[in-house]
Length: 462
Image (cartoon, rainbow, N blue to C red; front, top):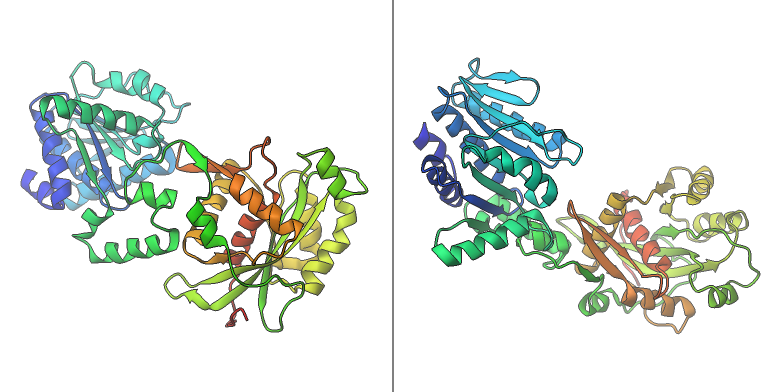
């Protein structure tokens, strides 16, 4: 059984498994950190270890404990995988599920727990192995106070699995500790296998990740952390000098559509305020937000054949400060419907934006999609905008000396990013440095382009 389970693993997985098993059977009580590129076999490694250990300890009333950041879906997925491996090994009808979170084989049990801050996990004991899945998303205090003590009585071996994120996570803390211990005693505790190592054994994986690198860009936060396994550091500028250069296009601004071309729009809505002169209001109240429409022309002729995505050329901006939404309704509809004949419009529907998005949807039907800003949805919006810039898919019109052009680039230069747990980020312009209306409108434009499904449309920017 031991040889069978281990031989099913790839060489890099076997290296980790043998180190963990040596610690378990030698009662060394080591703590390991294991970083494997996304979809590189981390979960399969864990399941095969669990299968082997349950088999070898099935005569003893002892536990292995595995926690994940959430019960659904992460913990549930881990349980399903172990059940499948038990069945594959011929234990179908022998293993038993208990209480919805325990799998028992003989007297040995695998206990699956949530590491969510609200989960009550105190009282469980790990005799065989303690596994922390997606350790980068597990709270340090939760682990230190509630999970780590589970293995105290048995000096249990502990394994932290995951992919890197920023330098403040539990996984990164364990990694740094392990590297320091390795320097002292030479015992390997940290294992890291990036996408290139995984791709040596899987040509399909190689093709997939190369396509992701093309789509996201080599230094996109998600590609950097999930596939290259390089941590990002806190935050900083959202767009680098190189990315701003890529965003800068050579096409001219347009004030009316070209026949036969496809146009989409992103709308960031401001809070309402009364003012006769929007420019004057902005000068008097620098934090007064504006409503911004960004119009994009889609070019399918040069779209990526693999990703089937069009290029997006920003061709026009509309900008109002301090205007009541009710006053803007007819103008918004006219611009989107009668001037540009937009095929897709994504509009900020957060808070006061909800009635505006409802009005636009009533006027333009399914062409309008509301977008509600939450921490996670804004994070995805920010990542998608970075991907569009990095791939060269998104281009801004050439300088025309306008106030819109100047404000656009000011916001691109001042935009900041902040990385948060669970592979999420925030992007914004700090209140002391200006506004992010054009930035958010641009991100919503990319979302609009991503949502649009062409019906055989073709064409290029003239």
